[in-house]
Image (tube, rainbow, N blue to C red; front, side, top):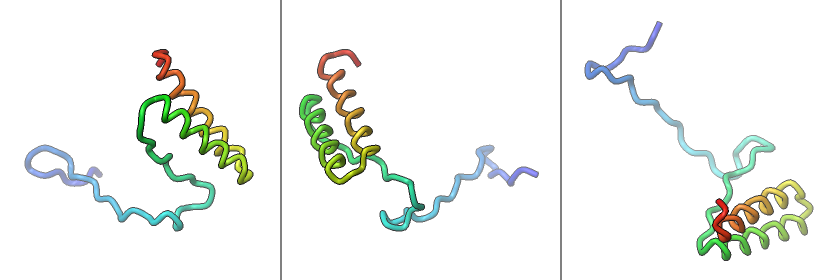
Length: 81
């Protein structure tokens, strides 16, 4: 049985729970990447720096993810994306 709809004909709006704090998420789930400001070349350099930091801390998966973002911004700076 479908939930009741308002008289306007639109389905009811979903209700969302409160956002979780950064430490209460399930294990293994990574937060969304932090937005980096600047030009495409600056973003590439910042993602490469984050990749190096992740590599130093022993997180190879995070390092590879950051290198992929850096590669994306390299292509953007070259006009290929």
